[in-house]
Length: 90
Image (cartoon, rainbow, N blue to C red; front, side, top):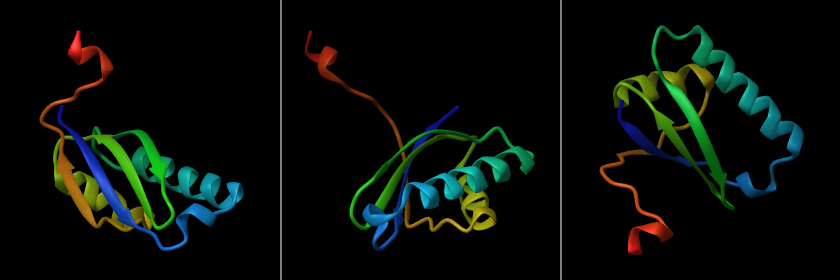
């Protein structure tokens, strides 16, 4: 199944409290459980004003549906076509 990186515009994201982060995570997880889809949240990274999420999903529309239902902005979706890491150079 394809992997995607989702960019979310979220002004002040880097200043979110741990409780706010937990609440957002719980809502996202509950929406995924309720969706009739194979969408899977892998991990997210928070910067000052954006959140970058890695998802495995059948298509972009499933990610957009999830974002809408969970109240999470979806600014950009990029399909991962290849992954590299430090071991790639070996």
